[in-house]
Image 1 (cartoon, rainbow, N blue to C red):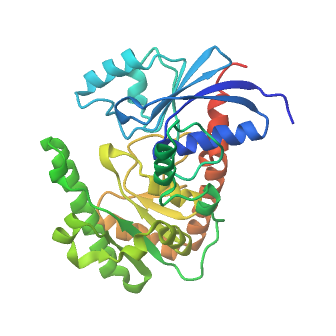
Image 2: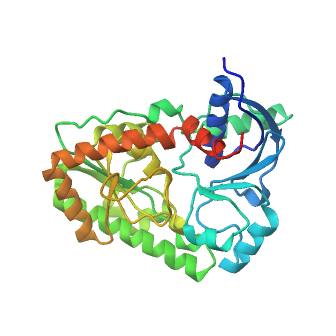
Image 3: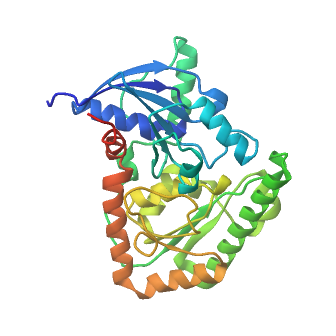
Length: 340
């Protein structure tokens, strides 16, 4: 076993957003690349952001938050909050945009990459209360699986099927008019995309809206049974479909679904990405982009009639997952930016 290159003290708090981070650190520990200690914390305001101290010298922040919403305030107030609360040497942000770097000049800011939750490897401290520990474990493992369950080779099935399963956001659950309007727009777009794909592609399209109290009121004609959206069945569906569709999430985030498509080496069609990814993840190479229903339908036809393009995208996404999304590689890529 090699001599560890890094001594790492990592903050730990159970959070689905952070499982990929914990998995990567643990796997590097098991391979002897790092020494690993943990410090149990409570997430401040439930924000999925943690600190790692490397070689007793460098402070690294891992931020898996959606967008630039550290607080409910203005953009300027958010910047002030970050500058005041997250002093560090290296800041790795899931929702990364070069605009942020211009405003946070004292930070070495980098994109963290695609994020999704799964059942992480390793043992981390939970709590001294056995009852609470049991509840936390049950919560973390609910609808989660080990990372290899998400992975699939760049295999193109002979039948070209299209997948788009999604949920809606209830506008009544937020107070801000801006957030209400954002949710309503997301909902309207998703419903329109599903209806258009069903009309255009018929049996080749598997798609619809997840059932809940709100969706039953506004999208009753395109709801899908709960068994289809059950996590294990959804992951199997991803692997069975050559083309998978993604849409923008809250705060313009890149959703977990996008990372799951990449792990399964699928051909992806997505609304434009508002945030940047490491490693040269590019439009027309890793995914096709659309803004309107017509563009979505056109992109699907493009892949259906261009087999080589579809296969190439699958291969590129498999390569990208292996080098940048796989938890071990993701964390190793961040640590290699630290002087050693």
